[in-house]
Image (tube, rainbow, N blue to C red):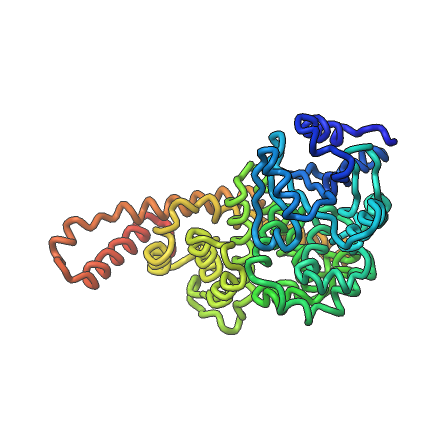
Length: 469
């Protein structure tokens, strides 16, 4: 019997308060990420992240399990989807636990574990640790794949993907989160089945995976590039696909400086690092990352030949953003949509406010910025990430091609500070224009009142020297 690991000892210590659940005939096993962590502790391997919940499997069918739990005062819950999987959600000894019946049958415990493991998603999640005797079971070779940094489907990749098409995205997300390679047969199956799988991925489930990837992948842009490379991004999120056209993910890894996708990938890395460094809540980290993406969509959708000659009048990308939110229901609340729309449609204006004609700057404030007063810092952060992406891209290109030195550019932190100052100053100047006396003059003639206030704001900008004449 292997020596108990710290994780298994912790679980055992909690469950010992309810000794009935450790009865050998229940065949209770720790499974999934918790079992992988135990296995890594036993083998002296690098540990995976600590899971939030404890996943357990046992011999009892779901209804019998629920009855046994109720007998001992534990109330089990679960959705219809969980019921279909034979899963019960229950709180035991202060731990939130998922209890699932062994899948696939079998006459002995070893057979039941082997059949269950075969039906799990990935080999690194197909380990079983028996709580009654401390024995570790690894029928799919998950520890070896963990040691070699591989994400591999259990059993037949085609069967696993057809069972749950969302697994195509999960395999790539887990690979990107951990910095692991995707096992060749698993990757080939994703590529071959992409057209078949994508129509069967629901928007709500896709939203969950994209949210997890944005929050947990060190390089969210590389994850999106891999989705594009495997044929998943274009049918699922065509609004983002244009950002990653060009070289494949493999070519990007070999020669990143040559990839047209590199600036957005680097900008998203900067956003991920900035969000973590600032200790932002998950909602604000998502907002920052989506804002960087939407700003890039606006830039990519602006054709130089179509841009007006008057500085600051370029607006594009709004339709793409609207359809993106429809494909990812629940990802963007009202605040996210408002800020992302501004960054998409006014991407040329927001980062050069002092270069705009006064009338353009006044219109921008009236139509957009006065409703984004609480988002000035986020807009400045997006400008920082955009600048960091372009500067790091220029450095990569220099290393490869040895072109002439890059001209001096504004540093990302300096750009963030400048943009924040300009937004704050513009807002102050615009709000200092009072309309009390004008309201008495124009009464209910709102169009005339708005025109008058606009003229006063333009004059304030001109007299302050904030913008061009």
